[in-house]
Image (tube, rainbow, N blue to C red; front, side, top):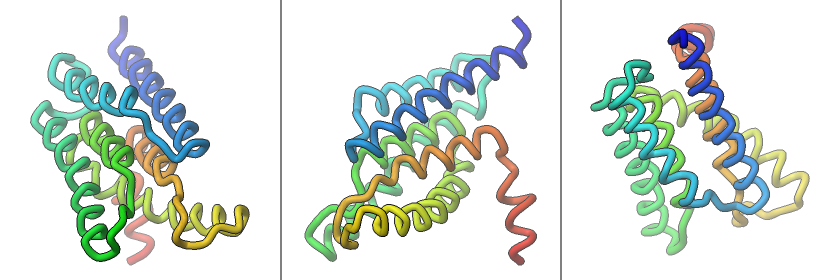
Length: 166
């Protein structure tokens, strides 16, 4: 099979899994370990064992570790200040999975895009649902949107968006 076709099949399957995770999080405010943990393992394995890898094996491992650790650390700091969690560990595992598939270098773009879309989505979520600011909000769908953008158009932020802002 042609390598271009194979990589698009892999990317399509990854996108389907991510969309399914976004749907689950949107409806339940949960990202199940049964999906996020295998995504981390498959991302590292794919980039390690396949000639079609999306990033280097070391970047995949570092991406998984940094993706998870960055949100874990952010939550730990918030918990110290507020005595409650500020972000779910499912979100940390999802970012770890995106790092495993796309490498550690993609994490800043993913976090920036997810944060920007999450702010807009959060405002809409709160307005439509009449929630107060202290209630839970699903961040996973915005990580998914950012991950798909980074998967399909990895140079979107540095080449098209940021130069226009400066």
